[in-house]
Amino acid sequence: MKPGCPIANPEISVDHEDDGALLFHPESGEVQILNTTGAFLFGLLDGSHSREDLVDCLMRQYDIGSREAAAKDVEEFLTALKGKSLMGDAV
View 1 (cartoon, rainbow, N blue to C red):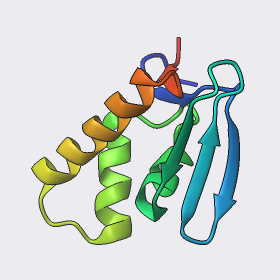
View 2: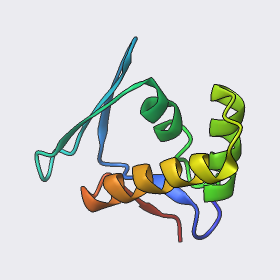
View 3: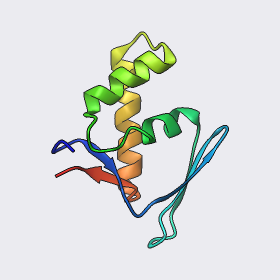
């Protein structure tokens, strides 16, 4: 793990589906449904990928030409997950 890198909450239960994933936080009861893009990004939240790494991976995986748009999407995704205690930053 690298300090400051996004990491999924280890308490989260993840159910992978063909069209995305379902996240469940057993303590809060919070449920989050992810589309395939969200599931792809969530799979990278292992504490070793920086936000910039996530942007690079997203751009490669989905052939996104605008780094600014990809960075905005990643930041919105991480903010939403963090707000629901589904992820944090590695220390």
